[in-house]
Each structure stands twice: as structure tokens, then as C-alpha cells.
Image (cartoon, rainbow, N blue to C red; front, top):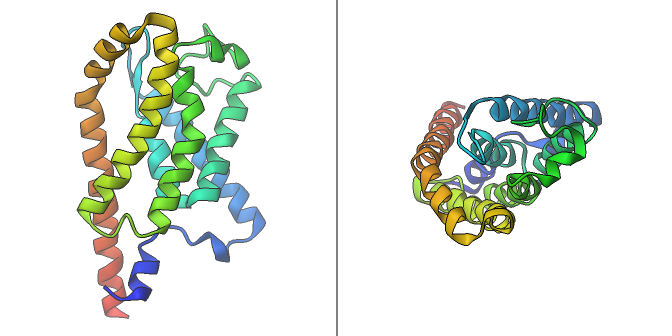
Length: 195
């Protein structure tokens, strides 16, 4: 793969050529994507399983580190002011969401999106194996922060018991994410060869 092709597969949207309005629009769209992913959930107790973990990583990969971070911060801000954007905002509106066992995952989202974007920028989406590494690192960040917060409420034993309930779903999301990235890369590389 040439250097030019590697640059084109770094992350999906080249935000260096975008206007301020386009960047703001993409950040808002990214936050809307996170809202939709929060509402797609399996209602486990005490923390539901949503599509947010996949969405956060994909936002970083698609938008890059800075714009991905902006999208996630916009999402968190929307929730903090009381908009119905989180998985459970009926019982815990606004800033009271920080009293939830799942708040650690929310707090991990900006870091995860930024790191996923940085890894994508450095070429970690170029192959299936590198993409797996990108997702592995992103999930380690997300689960380290999320489970540490969760354990403060229920203890480490219950935290790990709950974590194993989420593993099959998370593996499926990782597979979906990696497949989507590689399918897009294949499509884009075919277009590059035709140019």
C-alpha cells in the first residue's frame, strides 16, 4: 500500500479540508449517532448494554481524534443540561446521571473516542489485525474506567460477574466494527486504483 493510500485510510473523513460549519455539523451528527446508540439497548441490571461502546469508537475512527472528541463532548453536554440522550434519563436526568453505576463508562467516552481517532490516524485501520488492536485498546480504556466506577457501587466481584454478561455482545460489536472499517477500506482502495 502506498503512502497516499495509507493517508486515505487513516480515518474516514479528512477534517483538514472542512469549514468550521461542516466541523460543527459533523460533531452534532456524531452526538446524534451516540443518542441513537444509547436508545438501542438490552436492559440488563444495573447497567444496560447499549451500542454506545461501538458508536464511540466508530466516531473516533470516522471523524478523527479532535472532531470525534468534540462529538462525544457535545453528547455529554446535551445530557448534562437535561436532554433525553442517555439510556436512562427518566430516573436520572441531567447531572444526576453521574450518580449511576454506568457513569464511569460515560466518563470514558471522550478518552476512548480521542484514542481511537489517534490510532486510526496512525494507520491502525489499515488491516484486520490492526483494527482488532484499535478496538482492543479502546475497550481496555473504556472498561478500566467504567468498571472501576461500577465497582465503587457494587464491589469488584459483582462488577466482574456483570462484565462477563456483556462479553458476547461486545465481541459481536467489535466484529461489526472491524468488518465495517475493512469493507469501507476495500471500497475506497478499489476507487483509488480506478483513479
